[in-house]
Length: 315
Image 1: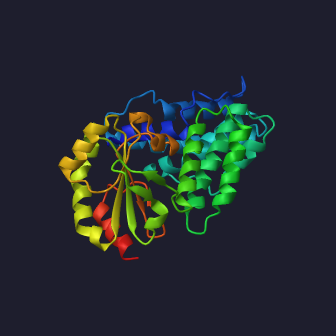
Image 2 (image 1 turned 135 degrees about the horizontal axis):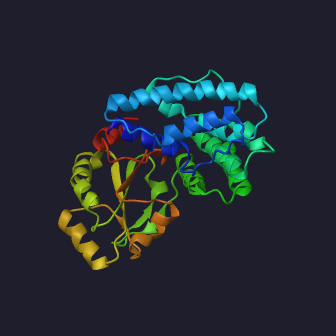
Image 3 (image 1 turned 90 degrees about the vertical axis):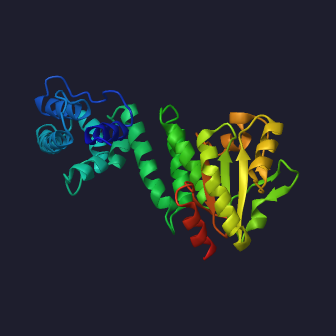
């Protein structure tokens, strides 16, 4: 990917798709300079002509941001614009890594400070709270992480800031944390009449494949799934399909033609498939891998599937 395009995408993500949220006090030159640098980072006045030029511009802008932010904090440390600038600064981690421009060892204002601030704008506090929640979610999913504590934090954010435009990110993460921190609870009667209960498959490695016959990328992945199943089924590898098809006869014919021996969840609702909606998924194919304890250990099982399954079977 073009470095300038990567930079633009990264910055767009970092500012949480907010519009121009900075509003330095009128006449306050120090904070206006910070605001100008931020706007130039987000929307460069001069468009770079090469990757090297784009990276050079980014390095220069980050250094200017740091210098002007420090100067503004000294000149007018109580200006309410500081909260917006601090929010922006807290989101520059990945951009700094890409540009190899480290920030201060400790930011003068933390995200927690923004959330507590009485004079910060509601949308600024909302975005700071959301950022804190999303950053903490990785630790919650790590071995020994406090998933319950994170869930409480996420639920509090949703209660305190129900109007936050990006709350869907938190809701999806809540679903993921729930799925990743306890054995998957999934029971249904399959397309062919088989009773499926994932809890009874503990001791085996299970692939959950959300797919449809009308989904080109899903069909392209099918040979990989078939081959892995053929080679490793006898060693304890199982596959469960969740079909987003709407025509039962077409699905049955396809499954038979392709030799897909594993059970299929089918409710005839197509893209409104109940499990697809329950787990707040957005696209197919989506493939999950469960270890022998019934825990989801990968939500992106398509890449290196055979290697992942082989490793889990050896545990």
